[in-house]
Image (cartoon, rainbow, N blue to C red):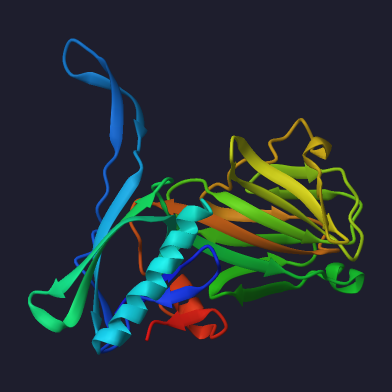
Length: 305
Protein backbone atom coordinates (compact mmCIF):
# COMPACT_ATOMS: atom_id res chain seq x y z
CA UNK A 1 0.00 0.00 0.00
CA UNK A 2 1.38 3.41 -0.99
CA UNK A 3 2.20 5.75 1.87
CA UNK A 4 0.49 9.16 1.66
CA UNK A 5 1.33 12.19 3.80
CA UNK A 6 0.52 15.86 4.00
CA UNK A 7 3.24 18.21 5.30
CA UNK A 8 2.03 21.67 6.28
CA UNK A 9 4.14 24.78 5.85
CA UNK A 10 4.63 24.63 9.63
CA UNK A 11 6.63 21.40 9.16
CA UNK A 12 3.97 19.21 10.77
CA UNK A 13 3.42 15.97 8.84
CA UNK A 14 0.16 14.01 8.77
CA UNK A 15 -0.29 10.45 7.63
CA UNK A 16 -3.41 10.21 5.48
CA UNK A 17 -3.74 6.43 5.66
CA UNK A 18 -4.18 5.04 9.17
CA UNK A 19 -5.66 1.59 9.75
CA UNK A 20 -9.27 1.75 10.99
CA UNK A 21 -9.00 5.52 11.52
CA UNK A 22 -8.49 7.34 8.23
CA UNK A 23 -8.28 6.50 4.56
CA UNK A 24 -8.00 8.45 1.35
CA UNK A 25 -10.76 7.76 -1.14
CA UNK A 26 -11.29 8.54 -4.85
CA UNK A 27 -8.11 10.59 -5.36
CA UNK A 28 -7.24 11.75 -8.90
CA UNK A 29 -3.50 12.29 -8.38
CA UNK A 30 -2.76 10.30 -11.54
CA UNK A 31 -4.68 12.57 -13.88
CA UNK A 32 -2.83 15.19 -15.91
CA UNK A 33 -3.08 17.13 -19.15
CA UNK A 34 -0.58 18.97 -21.34
CA UNK A 35 -1.78 22.04 -23.23
CA UNK A 36 -0.25 22.87 -26.58
CA UNK A 37 0.15 25.90 -28.82
CA UNK A 38 0.22 25.43 -32.58
CA UNK A 39 0.82 27.27 -35.84
CA UNK A 40 -1.74 26.40 -38.49
CA UNK A 41 -0.55 24.66 -41.66
CA UNK A 42 -2.41 23.74 -44.80
CA UNK A 43 -2.77 20.27 -43.37
CA UNK A 44 -2.76 20.11 -39.61
CA UNK A 45 -0.42 22.25 -37.54
CA UNK A 46 3.08 22.68 -36.17
CA UNK A 47 3.51 22.29 -32.42
CA UNK A 48 5.06 25.54 -31.12
CA UNK A 49 5.29 24.48 -27.49
CA UNK A 50 3.69 22.42 -24.76
CA UNK A 51 2.57 23.97 -21.50
CA UNK A 52 0.59 23.17 -18.37
CA UNK A 53 -2.00 24.98 -16.34
CA UNK A 54 -2.25 25.00 -12.55
CA UNK A 55 -3.03 21.47 -11.33
CA UNK A 56 -6.16 20.93 -9.20
CA UNK A 57 -6.63 17.54 -7.52
CA UNK A 58 -9.82 16.38 -5.84
CA UNK A 59 -9.90 13.61 -3.28
CA UNK A 60 -11.88 12.42 -0.28
CA UNK A 61 -10.71 11.59 3.23
CA UNK A 62 -12.87 9.17 5.22
CA UNK A 63 -12.59 9.53 9.01
CA UNK A 64 -13.84 6.86 11.43
CA UNK A 65 -14.32 6.68 15.19
CA UNK A 66 -16.47 8.59 17.64
CA UNK A 67 -18.05 11.88 16.60
CA UNK A 68 -15.72 13.78 18.93
CA UNK A 69 -12.53 12.13 17.65
CA UNK A 70 -13.57 12.64 14.04
CA UNK A 71 -14.18 16.34 14.64
CA UNK A 72 -10.77 16.75 16.28
CA UNK A 73 -9.06 15.01 13.34
CA UNK A 74 -10.81 17.21 10.79
CA UNK A 75 -10.25 20.43 12.75
CA UNK A 76 -6.55 19.64 13.19
CA UNK A 77 -5.98 19.02 9.49
CA UNK A 78 -8.08 21.99 8.38
CA UNK A 79 -6.17 24.32 10.70
CA UNK A 80 -2.99 23.21 8.92
CA UNK A 81 -4.60 23.92 5.54
CA UNK A 82 -5.72 27.38 6.64
CA UNK A 83 -2.29 28.24 8.06
CA UNK A 84 -0.76 27.53 4.66
CA UNK A 85 -3.21 29.84 2.90
CA UNK A 86 -2.96 32.68 5.43
CA UNK A 87 0.85 32.60 5.18
CA UNK A 88 0.82 32.08 1.39
CA UNK A 89 3.22 29.22 2.03
CA UNK A 90 2.28 25.93 0.34
CA UNK A 91 1.96 22.58 2.03
CA UNK A 92 3.27 19.38 0.48
CA UNK A 93 1.37 16.28 -0.63
CA UNK A 94 3.57 13.17 -0.58
CA UNK A 95 2.66 10.06 -2.55
CA UNK A 96 5.22 7.27 -2.38
CA UNK A 97 8.44 8.53 -3.93
CA UNK A 98 7.11 11.93 -5.06
CA UNK A 99 5.71 15.15 -3.69
CA UNK A 100 3.90 18.22 -4.99
CA UNK A 101 3.41 21.58 -3.29
CA UNK A 102 0.06 23.33 -3.09
CA UNK A 103 -2.92 24.58 -1.10
CA UNK A 104 -6.19 23.01 0.04
CA UNK A 105 -8.51 25.61 -1.52
CA UNK A 106 -11.81 23.79 -1.02
CA UNK A 107 -13.44 21.46 1.51
CA UNK A 108 -16.81 19.98 2.36
CA UNK A 109 -17.80 17.37 4.97
CA UNK A 110 -20.76 14.99 5.17
CA UNK A 111 -21.67 11.53 6.48
CA UNK A 112 -20.17 8.79 4.31
CA UNK A 113 -23.05 7.19 2.35
CA UNK A 114 -25.35 7.44 5.34
CA UNK A 115 -22.93 5.71 7.72
CA UNK A 116 -22.94 8.04 10.74
CA UNK A 117 -19.78 6.65 12.34
CA UNK A 118 -17.82 7.72 9.25
CA UNK A 119 -17.30 11.28 8.02
CA UNK A 120 -16.41 12.11 4.44
CA UNK A 121 -14.26 15.18 3.78
CA UNK A 122 -13.96 16.24 0.12
CA UNK A 123 -10.79 18.27 -0.53
CA UNK A 124 -9.75 20.38 -3.51
CA UNK A 125 -5.94 20.76 -3.67
CA UNK A 126 -4.47 23.41 -5.98
CA UNK A 127 -0.82 23.21 -7.10
CA UNK A 128 0.64 26.35 -8.73
CA UNK A 129 3.58 24.39 -10.18
CA UNK A 130 1.91 21.32 -11.75
CA UNK A 131 4.72 18.79 -11.41
CA UNK A 132 5.42 16.03 -8.92
CA UNK A 133 9.03 15.97 -7.73
CA UNK A 134 11.10 12.83 -7.24
CA UNK A 135 14.41 13.41 -5.46
CA UNK A 136 17.74 11.63 -5.65
CA UNK A 137 20.20 12.47 -2.85
CA UNK A 138 23.96 11.90 -2.77
CA UNK A 139 26.73 12.81 -0.31
CA UNK A 140 30.45 12.80 -1.07
CA UNK A 141 32.91 13.19 1.79
CA UNK A 142 36.37 14.76 1.47
CA UNK A 143 39.28 12.40 0.87
CA UNK A 144 42.76 12.77 2.33
CA UNK A 145 45.68 13.57 0.04
CA UNK A 146 47.18 10.12 0.61
CA UNK A 147 44.02 8.37 -0.51
CA UNK A 148 43.49 10.69 -3.49
CA UNK A 149 46.89 9.70 -4.85
CA UNK A 150 45.96 6.00 -5.07
CA UNK A 151 44.55 4.37 -8.19
CA UNK A 152 41.94 2.24 -6.44
CA UNK A 153 38.35 2.06 -7.62
CA UNK A 154 35.59 2.35 -5.03
CA UNK A 155 31.84 1.90 -5.11
CA UNK A 156 29.34 3.11 -2.56
CA UNK A 157 25.64 3.67 -2.03
CA UNK A 158 23.89 6.63 -0.43
CA UNK A 159 20.15 6.76 0.24
CA UNK A 160 19.87 3.50 -1.68
CA UNK A 161 21.07 4.92 -5.00
CA UNK A 162 24.35 3.54 -6.39
CA UNK A 163 27.31 5.52 -7.60
CA UNK A 164 30.96 4.71 -8.12
CA UNK A 165 34.08 6.81 -8.23
CA UNK A 166 37.76 6.62 -9.01
CA UNK A 167 39.65 8.24 -6.16
CA UNK A 168 42.78 8.81 -8.21
CA UNK A 169 41.28 11.65 -10.23
CA UNK A 170 38.35 12.67 -8.05
CA UNK A 171 35.85 11.45 -10.62
CA UNK A 172 32.43 10.23 -9.48
CA UNK A 173 29.92 8.47 -11.76
CA UNK A 174 26.20 8.35 -11.02
CA UNK A 175 23.40 6.95 -13.17
CA UNK A 176 20.47 9.34 -13.51
CA UNK A 177 17.72 7.05 -14.79
CA UNK A 178 15.45 9.76 -16.12
CA UNK A 179 14.26 11.06 -19.49
CA UNK A 180 15.32 14.73 -19.24
CA UNK A 181 17.75 17.11 -17.57
CA UNK A 182 16.85 18.06 -14.01
CA UNK A 183 17.35 20.86 -11.52
CA UNK A 184 19.65 20.39 -8.57
CA UNK A 185 20.70 21.71 -5.17
CA UNK A 186 24.41 21.53 -4.38
CA UNK A 187 25.78 22.20 -0.89
CA UNK A 188 29.57 22.45 -0.57
CA UNK A 189 31.11 22.45 2.90
CA UNK A 190 34.26 24.54 3.46
CA UNK A 191 37.04 25.10 3.53
CA UNK A 192 37.87 25.89 -0.12
CA UNK A 193 39.13 28.90 -2.07
CA UNK A 194 36.54 28.57 -4.85
CA UNK A 195 33.83 26.19 -5.96
CA UNK A 196 34.81 24.43 -9.17
CA UNK A 197 32.87 21.30 -10.08
CA UNK A 198 32.01 19.70 -13.40
CA UNK A 199 28.84 17.62 -13.63
CA UNK A 200 27.69 15.96 -16.82
CA UNK A 201 30.08 18.11 -18.85
CA UNK A 202 28.82 21.38 -17.33
CA UNK A 203 31.13 23.61 -15.26
CA UNK A 204 29.81 25.09 -12.00
CA UNK A 205 32.26 27.72 -10.78
CA UNK A 206 31.91 30.38 -8.06
CA UNK A 207 35.06 32.33 -7.23
CA UNK A 208 34.35 32.96 -3.55
CA UNK A 209 36.27 31.50 -0.57
CA UNK A 210 34.46 29.50 2.11
CA UNK A 211 35.98 28.74 5.51
CA UNK A 212 35.67 25.53 7.50
CA UNK A 213 32.72 26.85 9.53
CA UNK A 214 30.66 27.84 6.47
CA UNK A 215 29.07 26.32 3.39
CA UNK A 216 27.96 27.34 -0.10
CA UNK A 217 24.63 26.49 -1.76
CA UNK A 218 23.90 26.51 -5.49
CA UNK A 219 20.22 25.87 -6.22
CA UNK A 220 19.16 25.84 -9.87
CA UNK A 221 15.41 25.86 -9.21
CA UNK A 222 13.26 28.88 -9.98
CA UNK A 223 13.31 31.38 -7.11
CA UNK A 224 10.45 33.80 -7.64
CA UNK A 225 11.21 35.71 -10.87
CA UNK A 226 14.85 34.59 -10.83
CA UNK A 227 16.37 31.41 -12.20
CA UNK A 228 18.27 29.85 -9.31
CA UNK A 229 20.30 31.23 -6.43
CA UNK A 230 23.82 30.96 -5.05
CA UNK A 231 24.75 31.92 -1.50
CA UNK A 232 27.14 31.25 1.37
CA UNK A 233 25.95 30.66 4.92
CA UNK A 234 28.53 31.95 7.40
CA UNK A 235 28.10 32.86 11.05
CA UNK A 236 24.32 32.73 10.71
CA UNK A 237 24.35 35.17 7.78
CA UNK A 238 23.41 34.41 4.18
CA UNK A 239 25.66 36.06 1.59
CA UNK A 240 24.57 36.29 -2.05
CA UNK A 241 27.49 35.10 -4.21
CA UNK A 242 25.73 35.01 -7.58
CA UNK A 243 27.92 37.85 -8.91
CA UNK A 244 31.03 35.75 -8.20
CA UNK A 245 30.02 33.06 -10.69
CA UNK A 246 32.09 32.32 -13.77
CA UNK A 247 30.30 34.29 -16.54
CA UNK A 248 31.50 31.88 -19.23
CA UNK A 249 29.54 28.95 -17.81
CA UNK A 250 25.90 28.58 -16.78
CA UNK A 251 25.82 28.15 -13.01
CA UNK A 252 22.25 26.82 -13.12
CA UNK A 253 22.47 24.50 -16.13
CA UNK A 254 20.35 21.41 -15.58
CA UNK A 255 22.05 18.09 -14.91
CA UNK A 256 21.68 15.88 -18.01
CA UNK A 257 20.11 12.43 -17.83
CA UNK A 258 22.17 9.25 -18.13
CA UNK A 259 25.61 8.41 -16.77
CA UNK A 260 26.97 11.58 -15.16
CA UNK A 261 30.59 12.15 -14.22
CA UNK A 262 31.19 14.56 -11.33
CA UNK A 263 34.72 15.96 -11.11
CA UNK A 264 36.13 18.09 -8.30
CA UNK A 265 39.23 18.05 -6.02
CA UNK A 266 37.58 16.01 -3.20
CA UNK A 267 39.27 18.24 -0.61
CA UNK A 268 35.83 19.20 0.72
CA UNK A 269 32.48 17.47 1.03
CA UNK A 270 29.34 18.06 -1.01
CA UNK A 271 25.68 17.09 -0.79
CA UNK A 272 23.79 16.88 -4.08
CA UNK A 273 20.03 16.64 -4.56
CA UNK A 274 18.58 16.07 -8.02
CA UNK A 275 14.94 17.04 -8.68
CA UNK A 276 13.15 14.98 -11.33
CA UNK A 277 9.82 16.40 -12.46
CA UNK A 278 6.94 14.08 -13.30
CA UNK A 279 3.36 14.60 -14.44
CA UNK A 280 2.10 11.96 -11.99
CA UNK A 281 3.55 10.40 -8.83
CA UNK A 282 5.45 7.12 -8.81
CA UNK A 283 5.94 4.81 -5.86
CA UNK A 284 9.62 4.14 -6.54
CA UNK A 285 11.84 2.03 -4.29
CA UNK A 286 9.76 1.20 -1.21
CA UNK A 287 12.84 1.11 1.02
CA UNK A 288 13.94 4.60 0.07
CA UNK A 289 10.89 6.55 -1.04
CA UNK A 290 10.08 9.95 0.37
CA UNK A 291 7.05 8.80 2.35
CA UNK A 292 8.92 5.89 3.92
CA UNK A 293 11.66 8.24 5.06
CA UNK A 294 9.01 10.44 6.69
CA UNK A 295 7.43 7.47 8.42
CA UNK A 296 10.74 6.51 9.98
CA UNK A 297 11.22 10.03 11.36
CA UNK A 298 9.04 10.09 14.46
CA UNK A 299 9.94 13.70 15.23
CA UNK A 300 7.82 15.12 12.42
CA UNK A 301 5.18 12.46 11.84
CA UNK A 302 1.73 13.24 13.25
CA UNK A 303 -0.99 10.58 13.14
CA UNK A 304 -4.46 12.12 13.29
CA UNK A 305 -6.32 10.61 16.24
